Image (cartoon, rainbow, N blue to C red; front, side, top):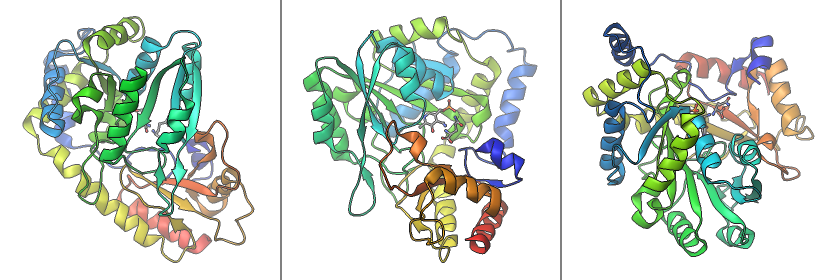
Length: 372
Ligand code: PMP
Ligand code: GLN
């Protein structure tokens, strides 16, 4: 969709990335690390400076005591952490449960590791929130189930776990001896005063969990590809065994720059929910009158819209509608069906990314108001 957006000079609200600059002090901190000569391989598990900064963040936010040496591995974005985690735990023919719509990396990474993805669909409830049907998850468990992958706040739905979801997950993982891969890359984008329900908050669950996160999202630098996995010792060893022969280690000065920046600006993370909530509210308000129906957005920088109320477009598939929006209305969106193995019939949803400058949002909203 980004290529199509470029081809048609459409405003790209498709792919999830900010179009505004990161804090210059973060950039300066990385450049200072380069100038100070930190341009050779970092330790395989990541620099101690960044692992320590991460330990501080998870202690402060989730009360989780991470061992800097034995629990944290820095990776090339959350993507590599997820890939290593999946490779680390999957034996041939193991089943891994994913909740769909799901981030597109999980399914091919499981297949690549010789495993079998078992999809359980999230359920669109009466408030149009995508929620987990834990009975359906239980029903999908077999003796071959090795792990479940969860993602809260969720891409693409924009919905979040409740505390009860975490309790269900913990009980299920305990009872069936499952590992949990908890993709929490949007952990600091939770709105309306709600708490992010990190798997690290519950010790019994954390003992079975690989928590995956990314500075690309939190610090507005998706191109830096610095993420990490936090996991119990045995899992960390297995993750590092993959990481060692995959990327081995990731950009030293970027790791050091992030560590310095987090140490000097511990408040940046706390400011993030309000920052993105303002953009969410702006974007949702601007869609009023377009005929697009907005679904609840509890977290992430994604907004789902339902176009079934738009008579002239309602017969289109979500892919056709997203292509039409890009080519003829000048705003790119992402259809929901590619996030499923078997998409539900008749679902008319597309995803917009609102991690954009005010000017970009205004221009996109104008185009949608005019074109729909
Ligand atoms: N998981 C989810 C749910 C994501 O949205 C993304 C980013 N698109 C990733 C993982 C990958 O993050 P990174 O860019 O740090 O590899
Ligand atoms: N996570 C972002 C998204 O869902 C972008 C990552 C990608 O393009 N693979 O849009």
